[in-house]
Image 1 (cartoon, rainbow, N blue to C red):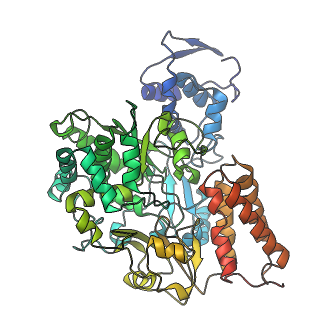
Image 2 (image 1 turned 135 degrees about the horizontal axis):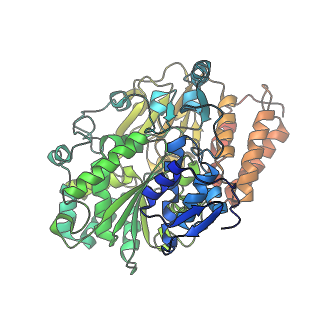
Image 3 (image 1 turned 180 degrees about the vertical axis):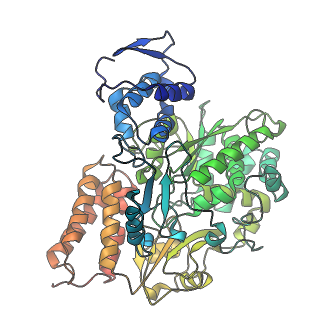
Length: 579
């Protein structure tokens, strides 16, 4: 380790103590400027501990020093240059000592928060002499403008719990997925059990894996993260793999601007996610589960860890679940501020201690996922649907919705809406009816962004659009992850599209040329557009950039980075320039 590549500083005693306690053993000692091994065998499989180790270093002093990073890299047997590459990939990690002490205030500047006054909040906090970081979406769009406080030596914080405001339907007896919100105590497994908890796991153990798979396939459940891939098909593919090592992953890195449903599920019904993952484990023959939570969700992370501990101590997790032959356990991994890690293969790389960059497909996760092994990956909303299907049966599940889009869907409403928050409605309800459920539009409606930054705008003429997968596709829009952002005529849509373009410019991992260059050029062109609107050459260039990114990018970020901008142009939401 003669060439550390990331500074020559030695770790201080506090950093060494933190890292040693985290790794569980001291595998090196420092003598002067030289590293001397202690005789413990190198274990390369420890690399997956890199991300949580970086979190510990960041939290201990408010940044990651060269000495601390080198020491962590040595213990985990990760090349220092690679460890540095990982640390600098994430927005929540600082590799330069802050110029001022104290916590970092991350304030969202994306669309929902921008129109709610995030600029004023930034000015107020800066005037108080506090550190401010202009952040992409923090997943708190229903209580905009959002702030996330990244502490030093203390747990990270969000403002006081506002669940009553976030979930206006709480207590409604007609709800399926959100029925425990505001009813069951999210910190009590006894409360979860008294409200129907673990009945689905008991049934899954009784009927066996094949019957569970048949039930899921018959239900028509599809993924709720945006891709809408059939859940039963995915689970069966992993179940049929002969590998002795398989994984179940909950993708809770919810970073799509306008989306916050998974955060509220984790905060209000964490045991449901644990139960559903356990069903996936025993059904597919997987023994290990992972929940990847975005780094800006400290309350959700705390409640998930608590639910895991309580489930394990109560016999619902770990060895011989409920007295059966099955074993399954779960670990939580916390992201660190990278939108791209919502892409499933980028998420795998992140858990493995690598930069969160997408992989080429094939191979697909069902055959070569986490650690190169068969993996089921679903988001929290998809997972809790499994409980409803097993508890109520296929017919009851399909009694709501449509043939192609059965059941209910969670929608996140933000922007110029009377009661922003999380809503559950049957598939097929019209867009206008959903907005009325949330109290209606504040002001005169100009446009609605469907599916978040990666989605598309629709105009007021689409208020009768049935909210189904098939109707969204037929109308050249998307339901995506369920984000619905409302804009009144008071909003300058050129400013909104510029911010969307900046979001993708900043969040592109830079791995492939079409996305790396295309997102930058798209933002540059939008900045060049004058108040009169784009001229012919600018419009043609934006069209060309969109086509190249959509056709040639490695992953979905590049494929959809121009979707909202193109739809805004097509709808005439931007000023109309000269032809």
